[in-house]
Image (cartoon, rainbow, N blue to C red; front, side, top):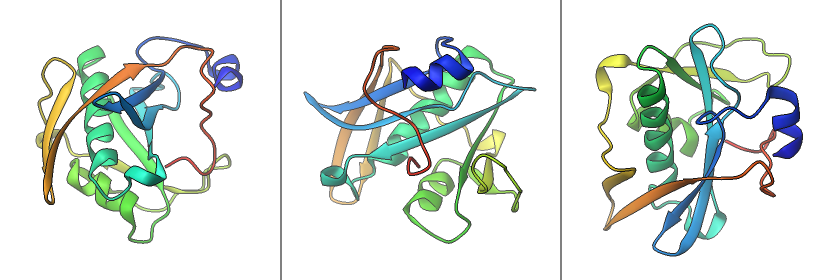
Length: 156
């Protein structure tokens, strides 16, 4: 992450976050960079042992809330492969819409943009979600610039 911040700068809240359930770190999420031309890109990842529990959906919801709290006019987007996947499900559940294929020299992936009218409200940093059999609370904690987590091509 330090390498990334060296390239794009470290500007709160446009940084990386750890997601916790109780005392366990369950995933990570963050912003690719501070907003550019009114657009910010999010990324999210659930640690393998916690996959399939709706955690990435909650992380994405928290990132959207953080973005809109910091700048209500910012447009939020995410890039992923165009094929149906867990990541596309996360985006659809958070009100994103597929906007077509773009040629991105860095990622060469597909942008999804969030529909403004489908905003979710998150209060006090928590998102209460009912997912499948279980309900859980998750909280995002801002990571420091010295965190060992790194965002890269495999981070969705």
